[in-house]
Structure formats: C-alpha cells, structure tokens
Length: 313
Image 1 (cartoon, rainbow, N blue to C red):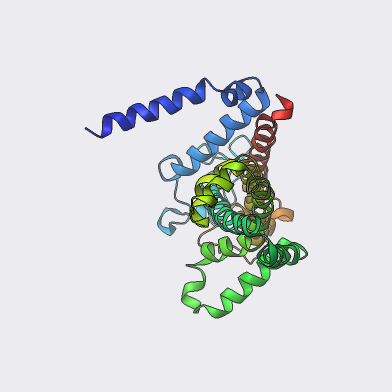
Image 2 (cartoon, rainbow, N blue to C red; image 1 turned 60 degrees about the vertical axis):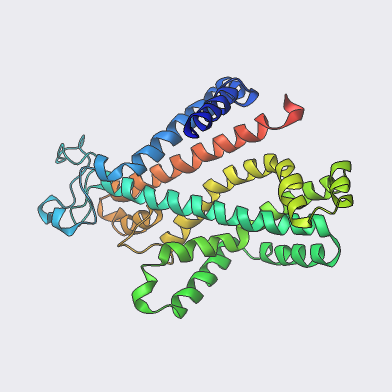
C-alpha cells in the first residue's frame, strides 16, 4: 500500500527534473553533457572494478613476476591481456587504476559530505545568532584559511598516526585523510551559508516563526537552510575535485593512503620511482586518469554555477 505512492512520487520528481530548467541547461551545454557522461563512466568503472578489472592487483595470488614491466598492449613487447602494461610486481596498471579510483572517489565524496555538514551547522549558527557567536566562528575559520590546506592536512595526519597504535594506522588511513582534509574545507561552506542566513533571518517568514515561538533549530533547518542550498551545491561540486586532488597530493607525498590500499595518488607516487627507468606507463596513465576525473568534476561545477545563477538566465 505504501510503496506505490512513493514510487509515483519518485517518478513525478524525476519527470519534473527532466522538464525543468536545469536539465534543459545541461542539454544546451555539450561540454557539460560530455563531462557528465565521462563522470558517470568513471563512477561505474570504479563501482564495478572487481568485475571489470582483469585482475585484483592487490591479491598476491593473482600476480606473476614473469609479467612484470610489460609495456602497454600497442607497444612492442606488450601482451593483449594487459591493456596499459604492468609494473615491477606484475600488477596490471589498468586494474590498479580502477581500484585506485574507487578509493579516491570515496575519500573525495566523504570529505565533501563531512565538510558540508560542519559548514552548514557553523554557517547557520553564525548567520542566525550573530554577535559573539558569529565573530568566534568566523575568526576560527579565518585562522584555518590562513594556513595552507596541505600543511593542515599533513599536520593532522601526522598527529593521528602518532596517537594510533601501529596496527590501526593503515586500517584507518582513509578516515584520517577525510578528517584531515575536512579540517579546512568546511570554512567555504560556512561562509556561503552564513551570507545567505544573514539575509534570510531578517525576512518576514523568519520573524513570523519567531513570534509564534518556533525553536531556533527548527527555524534554521526548515526555514533558512532550504534557501541556502543553491550556492552550497555549486561549492560542493567544485570542492569534490579539489578534495580528490588534495588526497592525491597527500598520498603522493607519502602521508596519505598506504600501498596496501592505494588511491590514484599512491599509484602516481609508486610509479614515479620508475619514471626514469623507462617504465613511463606506470606513472603516466594514473596521472592522466586523475587529471581527467578532476577536470570533468570542475567542468560540471562550472556549468552548475552558471545554470543556477539567475542573472545568466
């Protein structure tokens, strides 16, 4: 009895989306449409990597040193089963990229979600209450922004690694990275939400809610928050690419994901050691794939920013 109305409502929302201005704007922008298709393909490849990848590159039973250092398939000496060649341990580079992209995407998405949650709460509180609460929260944000994100992430990662037992350091590497990157990324969301909340709190519907003694938390979440989501969506999309890039940088520097649970940044770091020995494919292909992922995310963010800007309609 309950599933049919819910499914009808879901189909109705989907139909309104395809009939709305956002979908029309996407269809009119071939660059954004192409970026969306590529991003969907990247996500699907990462999601179904265990079934798509020719091998599990981190299962020692599937590795063969006789297949080590093979070039890509189209170069003399390459083999058909290894599309992008192999590394010094016989791991298929294409399989390693698929598995590594899973970790990069998960960390990037988790970082955006955590940063968004913190930024929404801080921004709503600062904009709604104002006064010393606003000053304290925003000065904290200014202090964090005055320090480069990479340095903050390295510091937080180093502190957590020292506090954790050795056996948990690699296991919790992804959690540590998410917390480290989110330490500064939430400030952008907080500033965006605060600016919108300062405008919305003075409007009549908020004043009316105050008069009938609606709780501040309910006013912030049900009245002010929905009117701040448009700029936040744009910021979140652009920050997804930035979070993936920061994670890759940290992993390249050796303070990110370990070789046992690699991301694209870890693959680039490991491959960089053999760049000048002639095995260029071990580092070039993961680097190109990472650049492609960040590029399509940024292109979609730019399109979304223009599409949601009422001045450009």
